[in-house]
Amino acid sequence: MTGLTASRKLDHLNLCANTDVAFGDAGFSDVRLVHNAVPECSADEIDISTTFLGRRLNAPIFIAAMTGGHPDTAEVNKTLAAAAEHFNIPMGVGSQRAALENPNLADSFTVVRETAPNAFLAGNISAVQLRDHGLEWAERAVSMIDADALCIHLNFLQEIIQVEGDRSGVGILATIREACRELSVPVIVKETGSGISREAASALYDAGAAAIDVGGFGGTSWAKIEKARASDKTHQMLGDTFLEWGIPTAVSVFEVAQVGACPVIATGGLKNGLDAAKAIALGADMAGMALTLLPDALKGKDALFSRIETLCGELKTAMFLTGAQNISALAKVRYYLTGTVREMTNK
Image 1: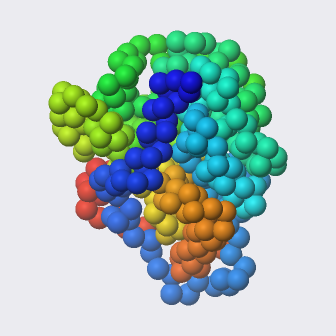
Image 2: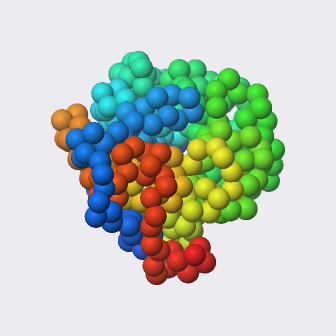
Image 3: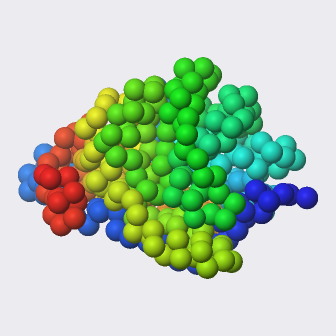
């Protein structure tokens, strides 16, 4: 028996793979990098390597959390891990709750470290589960994949629409603060589609977060997914009503980057290397992608490798056209804001 949590994880993967689960505009179409007609650098010498939480990486591309927790998800996690190892880029696994509840399901996660012995890997547990089960669960999640960091995810929009969801956010900041203080690895706090505001970022920085993943609006919509899973009209209508809830990713990156000095990961609706370049110019340190990579990951290693090579090529092209020789220079590139992003950032 795989259990209800494991079954739900497979539902999520199948919906993401076979239906249109994206919704909204992440805001990157409102960001235009300033073209440099005299770049004074060579396209062949553009350096996209970077440092994240003390680890030197070949590119600022983060394979964001997708799946795990069901036997049928092991193969795609193995493919994703192979890419993380090959390209020396970080990878986050999906929520490890199912395997923490039932250790027989751990193989869908342990395969990641087996495939990527040298990659930067991030474990994943929800803030609610951490609050309810304590640090022992967090350390088990870290140990399961020999993680270099632990993502604590915030998904209250999903939870309130999900039929089986948790409905209390009480004590979450105290839980995160304790984890940041006591865990054996750095803590990355991540949203899962609704974004992180300036105020929330400030509270998370104060709690000790080593990095913040904005998980903004405009990519995978968990309101849409849970609406599709719901069989009752109440939760279906709730999903409909809150389809547009959240902070666009570009806006969230801008706000979070203004607050503190710890690294920012931009996830939520990034589709290509140009979006990654725009995110870094707005203040992100890493550009995370999940749904963008999933179709190729399901096809196999060759397709995924080709996709990531294309992403890196697009990023380098954007850097060349702005005259940015390296990622530090890209972070200082000037940009124009238009439309909704300009209105929301008051810039």
